[in-house]
Image (tube, rainbow, N blue to C red):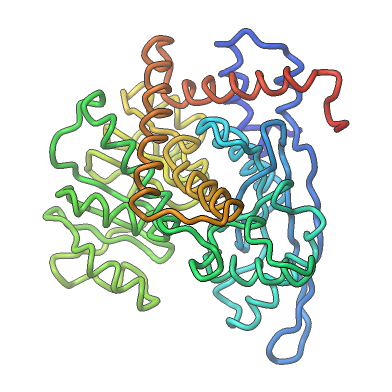
Length: 421
Ligand code: GLU
C-alpha cells in the first residue's frame, strides 16, 4: 500500500497503538488490509431521459467482532482509498464502543446536490440492487454518512425488502421512524460527543462557558451547536462548504438552523444579529476553547495546525486531523477527543436501532439517550484512564483500547483462519 494513501496514513495510528500492547504481529497484519471491497458502476435514468453512470463501492474491512457496520457516503470526490480508510476507522470505532460489529463503509462518487429527488431515489435503489448480496442484517449493515440521510435509508430499506421478498428492517440503520428507525438516531453523533465533553469536563479543566468553533454545519455540526448552546456555551464561529461566520458575542444558533433548513448556507446570516463573514480557511485558527471539526477528512493538517487556538478538539468528523497535525497539536498541549470515540454516538444508536428491529420492541427517546450516555461515559472514562496511565494521547489510548478487543477476538477465532471463514 502506498505510504501516501489515506489508508497508509491511518495505519500509522495502528502501528503506534501496537507498540503499547503485547500482541501477535499476525493480528496487526490482518488489520492492515480490507477484507473485501467491491466496486460497481451504477447506471440510472436521468429525468431528461439520458443515462448517467456513477462509481460506487462497499468495503467490509474486518468482521472479526461481528457483521460489518458503517455508513454510505454520497460525495463527488469519494475514492476507493477513502472508503477503505473510513471502513478501517469503523472497525476501530465499533471496538472502542464494544459494539458486536466489525467495520464497513460504502460510497457513491456523485454530487447529490446536482440530482433531482427522483434521480436520487433511483441512484439509492440502484446501490442496493448492486450490493444486496453483500449486505444483510447478519453480514453488513449500512447507515447514513456525509450527504445521505434517513430518507435515503428509507428508500434503500424498501428496495432491499423488495429484493428479498420481506421486510428486513435490521439490514440498514438511520431509517425514518415510520420504517423502524430509532428515536434519538438523528442527533446521536453530536449527542455522543456532547456527553463525552460533559463527562470529561473536569478532567480536562474546562471552564463553565466554552467558546466553540464548529467546522461543517451538516447533521453533526448543527446538533452539536444546538446542544452546546442550550447548556449556555457560546458558538463563536461556524462554517459550511460555502464559507464561515463568526460573532464574538455568540452566533444566534436558531438563525443558523433556519438558514440551513431553508436550504441556504450559514453565510446568508451575515449582517444580521452581529454575524460577520469569516474566510472559511480561518475557522480552524479562530480564538476559541473548543474546536469541533464536523466536516471531512484532513481539515487540520501540517499547514494550519500551528494556528489552532483551542485547548480541546472534538472530532465529530472522521479523520479531520492528519497524523502530522496530531504531533503539532500534542506539542502545543491541545487535547484531541478522537473520531473513533468522539463521533461514535451515531453508530451506537444505529446499534440500538438494529437491536430494536430484531426484538420488535421499541425504546423511548429517554431510554436511548440514557443508554448512549452510559456507554459514552464508560468507554470515554476507560480511554481517559489509559491515556493517563500510559502517558499517551487520547487518540493513542482509544486505539490501544480498541486494539486490545480486536486482538482478543482475532486470537479467539484462531489465527490459522485468517480470511478463510
Ligand atoms: N456514518 C456514521 C459513522 O461514520 C454512522 C455509521 C453507522 O451508524 O453505522 O460513524
